[in-house]
Image (cartoon, rainbow, N blue to C red; front, top):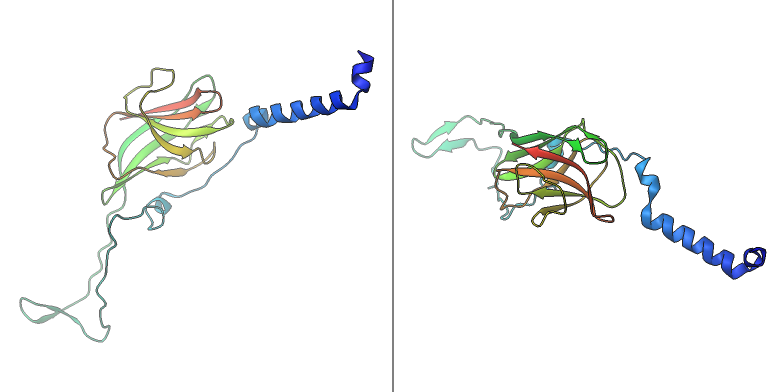
Amino acid sequence: MRSLLRNPWIIAAFVVAAVAGFLLFRPDTLFVDDAVDESLDDAFTAPALEADEPVEDEPMDDDEPAVDESTDDPVSPTTTEPPGPVAVLDGSFYGIDHTASGSATVYEQDGAHVLRFEDDTDIQNGPDLFVWLVPAADYDGGTPDDFIDLGKLKGNLGGQNYTLGADFEPGEWTVLVWCKRFSVPFAAAPLA
């Protein structure tokens, strides 16, 4: 045994195997928090949601007042603030063999939908975590056959937004935080 420990090739192979194992399994992520602080307003800004068709505003000369074409009378400028996002689905996170708390909400504004992990989100961190939307009122365990992949989990703490596709229809959904590396669920939030 002592002769094996004196061989530099064996020591080098052991070190390489230990580093590779650490990088593959990343046990440190279970104990490190990644906080995110996105606002709901950020979710519905132009860069966050790309429109299918650009909206063109007609340039208006500031010196000329707007005219009501039906009566040829000047119209006083009015500004109406667009309605804000409306919550259409919400639910609370529960852990699946891991700790999780907080809430998730689907918001709609002008036909666009965003899934938001609210500011109270606290999910145990782990390696290779993704956000999936499963078309079911309640997650029943195992690997889902059908889901919408919303990408990597941005952080395990705090508010964060995930843009839903243009074809998203509110209904019975469950938000699932899934570890791809080990094919296990971390947390779920049934939405109603």
